[in-house]
Image (spheres, rainbow, N blue to C red):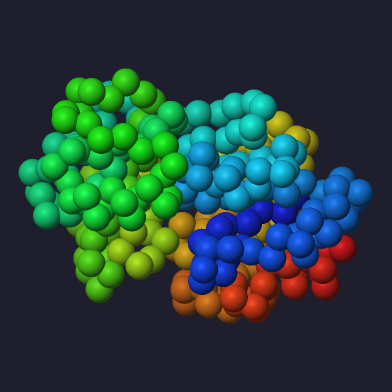
Length: 263
């Protein structure tokens, strides 16, 4: 029996216009609530951005920043942050070895970008990081650092993922949601780990969870839950490990699957 549903957002729950069917979701959420089934958002994005999609819902839990921050509007369950040594080493590598790439340092309270970055990049990033600050130096950051978000040319995503794996493996893991977006994350900290932690708090096993995703950073999550569901628009690696495949994000695949198979 499914007791918890976890959804990725971009390319999964949200359509190509970064929206979802709010009227239909409200009805489905009410039915899930009646059955005691938890609805969880599991995303690589910032908590403050994610919760703005669900302002009318106080009971939704968030596995944000690829599992580094687990919380809801009322309570922080867990925060996993980098040690200072690792933060400095990663910052130095990114500045010295890939100076042409834009990146943000993502903390618990906000995301931070050097003020020398293009204004266009800050404007684009503000869509995903609702708490975003410009800084003159990394020493201006006084926050727990959860991950690094790097932007690269779409066609070079695989190259840079491998570059970061080859050079930063002692400090971090590397994952990508596609489209040139790469997250440098803490070792062992990913969405599946976040769901395991949340499940321990809620007394729900991974085998009692259903998760939806479309990108590479959903791989562990779909592989480890009881029912891993890939979107029809998912990357090939995800389609290979999924238990089931549902309609695309533009066809409301998540809501379709919940209505047909869980409610």
